[in-house]
Image 1 (cartoon, rainbow, N blue to C red):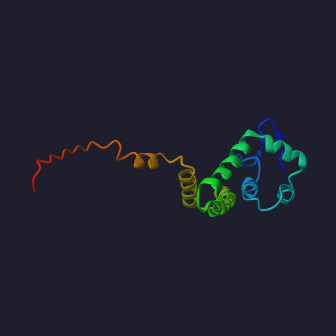
Image 2 (cartoon, rainbow, N blue to C red):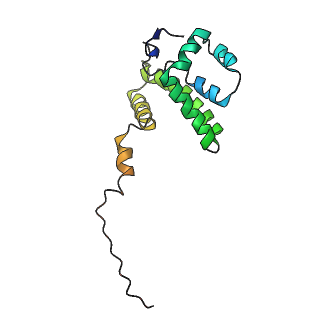
Length: 145
């Protein structure tokens, strides 16, 4: 585990890291094993767990996964897919920062990451396109056939 700061666990090598393994709160929400076993699998000590379980950021993430399980049908599948996506971010990070990766591949991975994170302004523009339209329509029904 990385060094503890007032803001949780940090990795100076990768600022995209959450401060805990991305799969960790998902495993807790899915109750794949007792918490002690999940912590042991991730080399998280009791002291680190005591810190994490009180961390507001971690609590929010865990609460979101628990809510997803309660409210959405098939959420177990969605959470498992999210586990895979989170783990694939590591591979994406390595490819983007790899010295032999072609610039076009790096650019494509960066664009996809921004889009998947919901930071792509073009998505908002597409979603709001119908709302800001200048279309105007009047229908007059005079009765009869």
